Amino acid sequence: LLTDLAGIEPRTVDIPFYSTVTGEQIDTSALDADYWYRNLREPVLFDQTARLLLASGGDPVFVEISPHPVLTPALEEHETGVVTGTLRRDHGTPAEFLAAAARLFVAGVPVRWPSPDAEPVVLPAYPFQRTRFWLAGGAGDVSAAGLDSVDHPLLGAAVEVGEQRVLTGRLSLATHPWLADHSVLGTVLLPATAFVELVVRAAGAAVEELVLEAPLVLPADGAVDVQVVVGEPDETGRRTVDVRSRTDGWVRHATGTVSGKPVAGQELTQWPPAGAEPVTGLYDTLAAAGYEYGPAFQAVQAVWRRGDEVFAEVTVADAARFSVHPALLDAALQPLALLAGTEGDVRLPFSLGGIAVHRTGVTSARVRLTEVRPGTYAVHLADRSGEPVATIEALTTRPMAERGPLYALDWIPLTPGEGALGDAVVSPGSVTEALAAVQDFLAGPGERLVVRTRGAVAVVPGDRVSDPEASAVWGLVRSAQSEHPGRFVLVDADELPDGLSVGDEDQVAVRSGAVYVPRLVRCAPEAFDGRLTQAGTGSLDDLAFRPYEQAPLGPRDVRVAVRAAGLNFRDVLIALG
Image: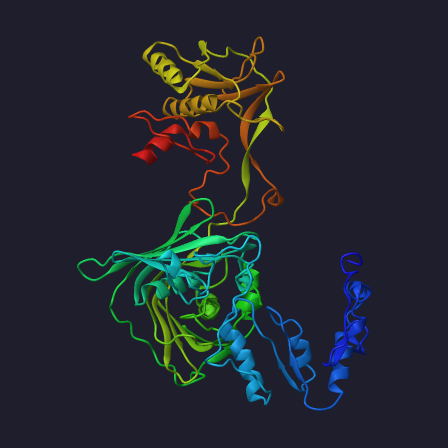
């Protein structure tokens, strides 16, 4: 830094300059390379400098020029003067900048507003300049790409395809950091209420039904592309709606139906409700059950209960450009734990019916939750005056998979017993050869056939599946074993030891002369990372058989890729129909 800034020659300016390096007013001619070197190495005397400015007299005005307020809260603690930022994270728009200028203006600070006759200055280009046409989220000019801008925090662009409408956006914890505050069992999930928000915004009408099929796990790094597709109307006027995400491949997370059928709201004018008793410790109860809410989602201000009814007040700081802020609606659902109970596994929304938004952009709401049938609840939100804000006529929750003991497949040493290995031994080189050998054997008088493979299974540490064709043979014979118990033995070995006998075992592997058999063993919980897995990702990124993906298919061929333990070929064929 000293070398790079050595040629700078600062000069004195007319505007007084207060330094957070020295904690005093200084002449700006001292802002040389050594000053900025000290600026990086020495403590920031921000509070001392702020107090000096406040003591200088007059009516101080503090403007933090930054992409997000960092120093403003510290200045506001002094409770004097005018304090404002210029931009905010996720709200860095010209409108936000002008709003900051307006706050100064109403406080008596002279603002030189743009003249209607002024023309903008064309800024010079810079290396690697680029223009974005597909937005990562937020509104912008995408017309050059034939798209419509969408003024929404989670969506950026839309396009009409006939009578079908497609909206897109991009979500990440970098651009939407508040989403990191919604975690279940250690995994950051897009809240179900965000799917509701996406569908309501895309459809522009009441949602008749919405079913959540798979969770959307938000990665710690990187972004997820989101797509909302509203289909063409059928003869009744109904439209389908799907929500998908993409990291490697597209995954459908939610599907539903949109109709023009009105959904009535409910007024909540008497508040707090008569006869309702206050409830405390909600977030302690939820945390003990596995719900991990950060500050952005801890929006419940008060809770009451009256028999089978639960009431709550919820508040978020900013709901601009949302129909209903997902954190606000999620907070409205959090007291459902008082009705559903928190014993056992975490319950997550599964289906929602009769969804309507009656008023948008609300930051505070009253909530009424009632059970309409076991496991299904009605949700009503109203504003502070009691007027309806949003309605969910039927919300059904489901528990997550039961968390019992964990087991894994392991290969353990076997002490060879007495007895013959089998009537015959074959070493098929392909699935076709294996199928023929199995069929011929079943048609004959033999009692036990040994099928030998090489590199079909991973057994000991450092071992791996080295022959995909052999692994396929292994799967085929396992299917035959399930249909004809006791008639087939699978042996994976480079060399068969002399006198090998395996007793009643039907699967064995030989490594360096030692014989191993598969067993289910109990695993320590720390052997797993404890995170939720996202079913149906549509991705085969862990599949090791990449060369075979490019193999040409014949007219009657089907390429099948399986990435699950415990499946055999019969399972796959059943799945294929």
